[in-house]
Length: 395
Image (cartoon, rainbow, N blue to C red):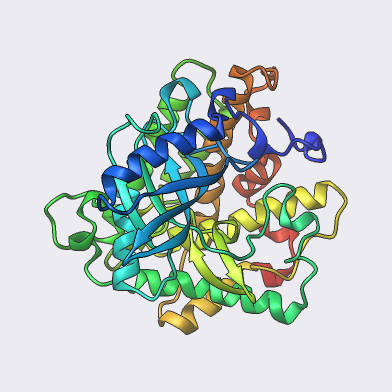
């Protein structure tokens, strides 16, 4: 898929959703109710109602929304809940593996050790028997999420907000990263995420090396049965030629740090979601991803002839806010924003491959057209991308 198709009503996040992911809500309710009986006291008498499968669900983990009633201290109480379920291999998943229990443990630990707002997690189920895949259950948090479909830069409650409210949302989102990165001794607290199991201290450089090596393995898996992307291959070579000087200890990184994974109320975060890409790494890993994912949507708006949100998440503003909040000055953001664009390119390559597999798209003659932000990545590699923006967008 190329930029020429971005104004089509079918946005990328709706692509490549396997039909089997749309399980009958009544069947899900029965299965969840039986499962809850084994998780709750014998006199709880759980009942599951109002099961919903969100329309944009299925690009990665499955998400099921449901209400549950059960008896607590002699009273029937209502709980709005969410189940995140690992996709079946037959669904041609975006990633080669999904450790749902690890996500559960990360969310739980972050909630205990930091002020980062995360949903309360209830249970982790490592058996696939109940719902056809491993899953965990967390509370459902009410609020607003900047939409992916259509992108919030195309017109949304965020783009239509006042500049002051939008800046408040931006700064509070960057504060989430600063607070997350301040969790001490992450290698000890999150050993499953460490590139050096058993080590109490992991440097940011070692963690970045491990992360890039993991990206190489992921790309090899993505192209195992199909064509390679010359543009992605070029990007991987660029990383080696422009390796940054990274110092200090690794921090806990959210991994999928973007405003579309945060629930807001009154322009303040109330729940940080989607922890499947959590890792140890340099702070710039999250900062680069947050900046680039906005640029991704901003560039789509530009191609569609829309004004977008040009005053939002400028690279220099993000770096300055993070510096003021944490006392740390981000470096090498040219590298980390390009690294984010490259990571996203490989994910998009996989997503479009799924669309082809499910008959939702035809394979293009040029494999690079599988990358929705091809032009952006090409310009970043050429060193011309940031020069084409207002200088305030350059760190």
